Structures are given as C-alpha cells and as structure tokens.
Image (cartoon, rainbow, N blue to C red; front, top):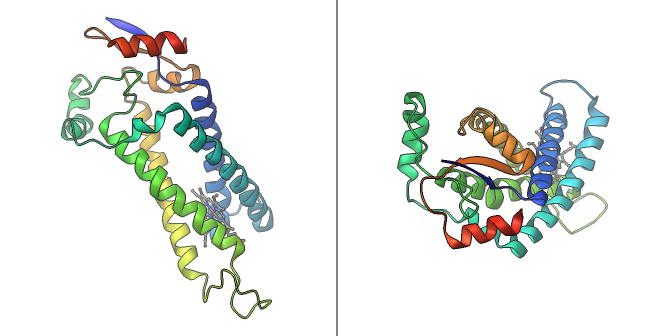
Length: 218
Ligand code: HEM
C-alpha cells in the first residue's frame, strides 16, 4: 500500500535548496580562483566567493539552531544496522529491481549510508571548509602589519585543506545527484525535497509516534 507521508519540513527544504545553491556558487567561484577555468574573472570570483561564504555561514547558524530545537539532529546518529544491506542494494539489488532494504518514515528519513555520509559532511567536511576558508580570509604572515593574531608562516596548508575539502564536496555532489534518482521512482526523492511529501510503500502499521508526527506536520 502506498502512503503519502510528510518527510521534509518547510525550513528543511528552504535550508537544503539554499545550501545547494550556495555550494554551487562556492564551487564555481572557488575553482575559478583555483585556476581551473575562467568564467566570472578572478576579481569577481573572489568577491562572489566571499559573499556566498558569508551567506553560507549565516545559513549554517540557522540550520544548527533548527536541528537542535527540533531534535532532528538525532536523524544523523550513525548506525551499523542494515549498512551492509544498503551497500549491497546500491551495488547489486538496485540493478535487479529488488526492494529498498530500509523503510523511509518521518522518524527515519535517512538510510544508514546517508546518516554516515551526511554526518561526515556536517561534522568534518563543512567545518573544515568554513574554518580553512576563514583562515584564508583572515590570515596574516608574521611580518605583515605586525598583527600577531592568526599568524601563519605559510598559507599553503590552508589552501591545500580547503582544496581537498572542495574536491570531496564535488565528489559528494556527483554521488548525491545520482542517488537522488534511486528512490521508489526516478523523481520521487527530488519531488519530496520540493513539496515535502513522498509516496512511501507502507507494509505495516505506522507507530503511534509516526502517526502523531505525520498529523502534526500536515
Ligand atoms: C564558509 C565557507 C567558505 C569560506 C569562508 C571560503 C573562503 C575562501 C577564500 C577566502 C578563498 C581564497 C580567495 C582568494 O584567493 O582571495 C577560497 C578559495 C577557494 N575556495 Fe572557498 N570558502 C568557503 C567554502 C568553499 C566551498 C564550499 C568550496 C567548494 C565546494 C570552496 C572552494 C574553494 C576553492 C576551490 C578555492 C581555491 C583554493 C586554492 O586554489 O587555493 N570554498 N575560499
């Protein structure tokens, strides 16, 4: 039986798409700064990169507040349960039309692999990008202006870290866009992140807590 359930709330959808847009701009301008291609022109790329970076930091502050106040941060607690089944599904099962090994509900909207990857992004890759980016912005060589705070002998390790993080984000975005298409239909995941609702296969009773949440959020 198919059931329409509310998976992504309004703020979550706003946060997701704003973040996607900002990361896209940061990638485009970042790789131009890196010298990969020419598009906006170097000076413009630097200026747009900075503006998008500040907007990204503001968005992150709101997103942290939202995750903490709604308790949604719990969705990202990693679990080893079904992780092998989920990997087998992506490598083999998906090509044999097997059913998804994990069920999506309001309380567990992420599968075990998503939990792991998104947690890694939130606690590792994004903090590395923000911190190395801010160090990039505010560094001072020791001999410059006699400013003693944030003295760095060389900007090289910061640039290297920021660039490694940027490549990790590019890899993530490519995998993410492919995985978006692997829901119950090719567009069902994308549609859910736009309108909030998804048609989910319901094989049994939903828990009392799920029903309550579903009703609250409608
Ligand atoms: C809040 C987050 C971020 C801040 C504060 C930030 C800041 C900066 C700054 C100040 C630069 C150097 C610009 C210059 O040379 O004048 C830079 C370079 C760069 N940024 Fe970011 N950035 C952030 C996020 C990102 C993201 C999300 C990406 C890509 C996914 C990215 C990719 C790059 C790349 C590729 C470079 C060139 C690095 C190099 O060649 O050394 N940045 N960033």
